[in-house]
Amino acid sequence: MRFMMIVRATKESEAGEMPERELIEAMGRYNEELVKAGVMLAGEGLQPSSKGARIRFSGPKKTLIDGPFPEVKELIAGFWILQVKSKQEAIDWALKSPAPFEGEAEIELRQIFETEDFSPDILTPEEAAREQRLREQIAARGGR
Image 1 (cartoon, rainbow, N blue to C red):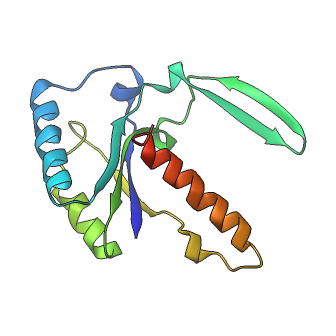
Image 2 (tube, rainbow, N blue to C red):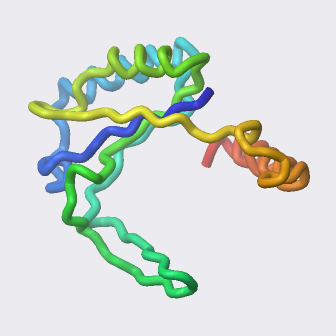
């Protein structure tokens, strides 16, 4: 099972404030623990939404919206992707995380869909094979 641990943005992270050295060190130790346990697949912090963009779809129409975006509590400041045996294991790892920001902070856990979650009438064997080939190509390039 793969889970994404989503770090919710704060007014400070959206203002581009960088974390204190102590938090960087604590996150580094936490990431090392995740890697040593063999559960971390990826993890990154994100730039503020002022440096981002959104594409809104309305039928065939596409609209570009430049950041910043107004609802800070709905934005993502960073993430980890974990490969674990259960939702409880993902929760246990999230509970071990250092607080991502001073004051109020929130980490959301979301399970990632796997190929086997889809019925064959939705994800045909050909589409599943294509998905597997793409994952293998990504892995061969080092995940980037």
